[in-house]
Amino acid sequence: MLEIRDLTVTGRLLSTSFSLRSGDAIVITGPNGSGKSTLLDCISGVLKPSSGVISIDDKEQPAYLPQLPPRPFAYTVREYLSVGQKQHRWTKFNATFDVDALMEKEITALSAGQWQRVAIAKVLSQPSSLILMDEPDAPLDTHWSECLSTVLSAVISDGRVIVVTLHRQDVQKSWKYQSLNLTPTHTS
Image (cartoon, rainbow, N blue to C red; front, side):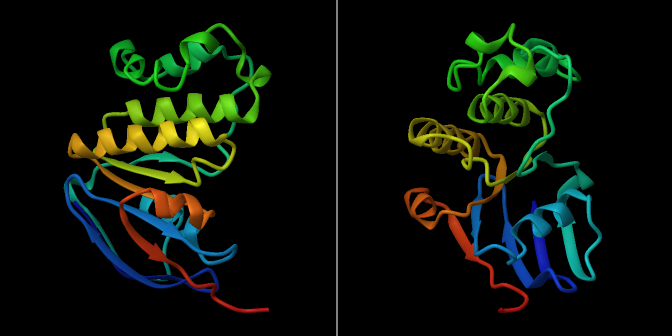
């Protein structure tokens, strides 16, 4: 499904390799500057690697949640979730992340944690079998972080593949997925 072989980005990501099949997940950790976001940017096609191979079955476009998802202006949550989606796809995750209570609010009026829950619901509802999530738990409190872990387990059991970066190793230890710890390209 996804194979990363000797992937590098000069000055940003040291050689990295891993392979995932349907129903697999990997948690990528490392300190600031180790290349976690860079790796996801390469897999998603946002950034071209300096060297190495990225192989995705069916050349499918991954569903990607960046570290700080941009907020569209003047959209309600309902309008945002509806863009490019069939309603039955995104309603699946509403109850878990309490998104229904936010439907008529404007995106710009949401707290960081509320916005992240909406963005997670949108990404998980995309039909892609490969999901990339860059520090999705960062603005979430403990309750929502635990909900995220539970939902990701269910998504994986459906045969989807997840690559998630985490900054906090205490959270990573509670998630029972493969793990990869990146090293910074330089030390200071």
